[in-house]
Amino acid sequence: MTDHVLVEADGGSRGNPGPAGYGAVVKDVATGEVLAERKAYVGIATNNVAEYGGLIAGLAAAAELGASTVDVRMDSKLVVEQMSGRWKVKHPSMQPLNAEAKELAARFSRVRYEWIPRAENSHADGLANEAMDAGKQAEAPKKTVKQDRVSPVGWTGATGTPTKLLLVRHGQTAMSVEKRYSGRGDVPLTEHGKQQAAAAAKRLGAMEGLVVDGEAAPIIASPLIRTQQTAQAIADALGGRVETHPGLIETDFGDWEGLTFKEAMDRDPEFQASWLADTSIAAPGGESFDGVHRRVRKARDELIAKYGGRTLVLVSHVTPIKALLRMGLDAGPSLLFRLHLDLASLSIVEFYPDGNASVRLVNDISHLS
Image 1 (cartoon, rainbow, N blue to C red):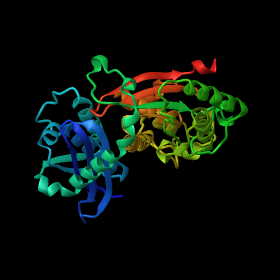
Image 2 (image 1 turned 60 degrees about the horizontal axis):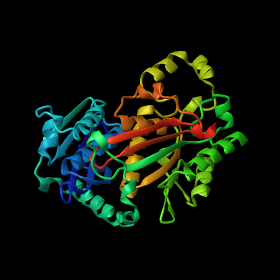
Image 3 (image 1 turned 60 degrees about the vertical axis):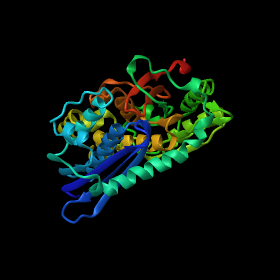
Image 4 (image 1 turned 120 degrees about the vertical axis):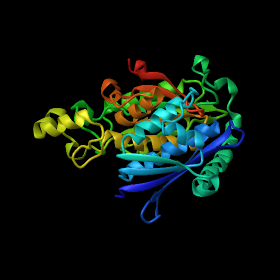
């Protein structure tokens, strides 16, 4: 773990708005060693949106490294002044990005912002340009997508073509029947769970826009068998194939894996209460909900960089799906405890390249009735 790190971040747009991407690098202040690099294509957006994306990615990477003190250097005067509190955030598209960056910054003991000339920010600038180059190449297949399938933005003010995520929770397992902590334990679907997966697959198979010009929408699942089985049922219905992304895996509940809530509470009531009250606390030998949120945000950014502007089917678990809905709603961590997600449920969230988002459906199980 490195206590004091330097984050250099940048973003760019070829057109402003235009194809945009960001880059961020985290370095050890004492040695100058590069500890982490982040880059992603964000679709059609402005320079400012991309620059905030770089800052958010850099702060998230610093948090993952366990840093407590962060020096941020950027060549964006706007972002530096807004994050320092000297300039107001007036534009609606900037406000949620500024809030997300401040939420991340609040987790450190100190964050200091410094403006630097662009020439001194070449590492992050290079990563941002690599992201834009990769995004340009990835955009070619999207020319076949009909424009009438772009979601209406209405009064939200969102611009650009969103990336639509259809979020499917896996079907029933023996662990879910007994209401046990089921994180990294690799348990298969029950027979009823397979029926639930088939029902969800039938629902998605009848939805418009999931097969375009004979090509099925990307189907990405957590690596665990319960999500892989559910995703395969959907792939069979759509004529597609299942990809795997480790960022979509469930929370690691550590020593509580396989226990009921009561069993875990009886074992360590004080720690369980602290864990429920503070999402930065990890289960014994496991992972915190804050850690899951950062991991899922990174997975989302990677998927948008690869498939920006398309419809994706993500087959995952309770906590990662709640994290994605939380991002869409720009909500705090209390949402984790106030939102219920049934087995084999369907939720839908869209992320726009300008930083806006729209949650369109939550916990729909009409296909199971």
